[in-house]
Image (tube, rainbow, N blue to C red; front, side, top):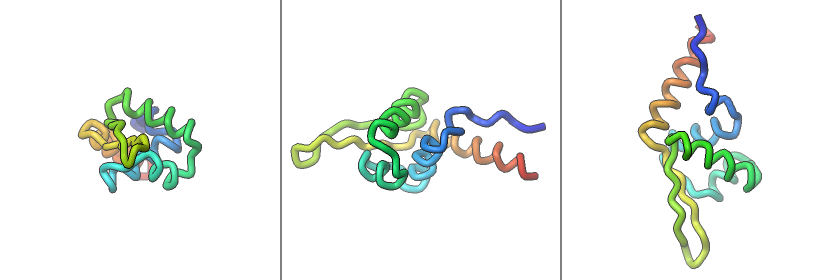
Length: 93
């Protein structure tokens, strides 16, 4: 029997964000934008959804008088990603 996959991680962009953060643990908005090749608006919307779910933390600060948004994966996010990966692998067994 197939397990239901986390619908939050079925989005290509949200999965890309989480995949990057699983390795890097944190990244600023511009780096995520570059890595995912997403538009700023779409990336912002998907980051908000991940933050609302508790999968990432978002810190808004400044660097050299410019706004800086830093995203960090949470323990809940790591657990959700690991479960998603495990459940997805079960589809191929």
